[in-house]
Length: 118
Length: 273
Image (tube, rainbow over all chains, first blue to last red; front, side):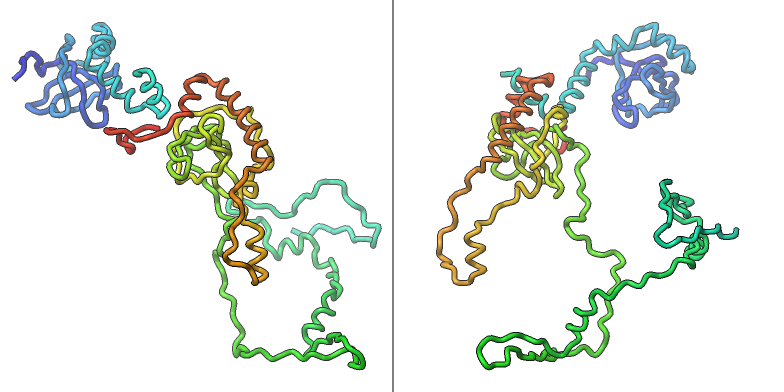
């Protein structure tokens, strides 16, 4: 069992692993019950909605949010904390990006990569 | 609405209107429903005034010949009369009913009239991967789609040995890579007839004659015609120029030279080409 340092709390930044907004990060605005939370990601294009905990992977980021904060507040706190840059700098995000680039490589790109590796 | 008064044509002095033809009827919607019915248009055009011109019986002579029971044929030889009446044989079976023609509501379309489609990702200048044939695995440049629907491609021959050739869409992977061939002028004569396979004339003549030596050796191996060489050289030159002008010139050249293959771990259905 790993370190139990990522808690489900108001303000926790989470990564949506599957479903419609998969691949995006959002903040937890409210905890509904054992399994569900209210998420909101105005800066990353995630609508304010109820989300099952099973879909979320917690990140190590947490913003200072009052519970049930409305979207405008979430946006303000998010941009103040510069979460977009911080997220991009994580190796998690970098790996996702490289995976995305790799799958979208055209035949020519693959050829150029193979050549570069030689 | 009363029909408009029509100018009576005065024999050969009918004035030729220089104004553009204005149709009296028009469609009122997209389904081409006409504003005036056929009867109405007859009235509007005053077609009742137009005298029907009787077409001269041009084919009466031919018809008469067909209807006659015999044909007069000339014969040679002396004191023969010079002619014979050859009577027509009655057909072996005569139909008892008039053969009714089946109404073709959707008539069979001949091959020429088939709709030619092209995959959306195949556009002139696209790099294709050939999947079958003697040039399989080669990356070639698509020049255009011919009238038969086949694609006209070329290596360029300088790079990978694939000549100006027709290829079916079905045996091709279209990649995202594009070369700008807007400045490449293709010779006019590159069409389906140009690429049509030539059957050896000797064989066809012999088969018509009937007394052929069926064990005769077929013609010598295929030899490239002068026009082919000419066209290949012209297209190659222009195409190499276009490749050079494009962003990734040297890389593109080695790319077109290389062969395509699926490596271990690669899943074609998940790959982007």
